[in-house]
Length: 123
Image (tube, rainbow, N blue to C red; front, side, top):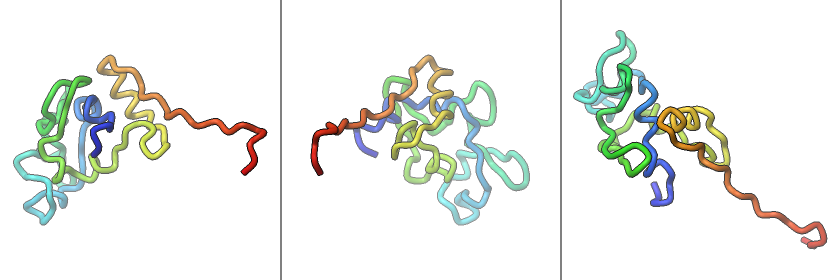
């Protein structure tokens, strides 16, 4: 993750959504997520501790929302976390990112400014 990644100054998704995933991602099942960081939802799914209740805040999140944050288990995070993208990352809008940011009083991430090409410019 680069230093310009907006997630490093946000963390809203980690303190808004329940982070649930298949129990097979846990270390005891051969996965990477530490067992001590999850609680059972049912016989198939677990959730990151802290996101299994409201108000949610993942126990792996360190720092202040909207200021500076980091995941203390980034390399071992679940597929749910790996798949969640900041809005406009890879050019795709993510309304879930906007909703989490809004819940914490943060503005949505602006889309990247597209360069304009002059119509009289020849390729």
